[in-house]
Image (cartoon, rainbow, N blue to C red; front, side, top):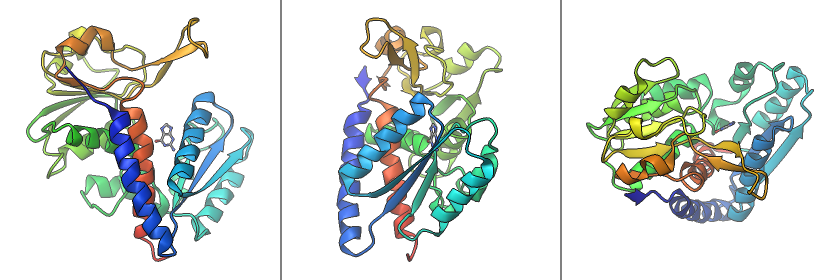
Length: 292
Ligand code: GUN
């Protein structure tokens, strides 16, 4: 079994980003990222803190906007509008989930597609489906694909089973891996909570990608000998022995399946660090693609 070290790959990607940011900054065009956080969901806070820290390490201009959970939708739309017009900002990320009174789809549609480094805007979703390389691809699936590439895991002709059909991970992951070309050309099955006989479906996977958001949802019944497992889950489970009172576990029961895998990502230290690295990379792309 090979452990897929997302932390190490992310460090390499971030180093490439740092050099590119340095060059762009020297040329008078420093990439800028705005992160908007509404409310105080603890997991979202942790993600946003992490993004800010990474921006600082890389020399990327970053703007963090923290708004109360009671922020009216109109106010949030105004915030996005002003970021759309800000020439120092090339990427805009509105942290999901948003409070219930806010229409998340309306917020996403209000982001300038050229600054939509999350790749959630309908225009970018369409570009991904159309295999137009000029669009933005959501960071987590992009990070998973990069991990497969870095570890020389062939996707061409491979049976990939993705468990989870979210707009953030499952759907874009499927589009990426079924696209024509290197790191694509896979035969993709998307399974989800209503899938009949999930274990049998998963057993057909050369590459199994878990993105359901349920701790240890997939176990030894779901993983065949020699499969590659990419675990996107980041679930907090109570643990009285842990410093914070919880620990992070994936959607896959790592201990139960690791021995039979050809390669597997750990949680933490697998997909997680790649998501932020790809966000930085998308922000650089956004900066390069604009003349401001
Ligand atoms: N919440 C969890 N993952 C993401 C992400 O990739 N982008 C945004 N905006 N919110 C998230």
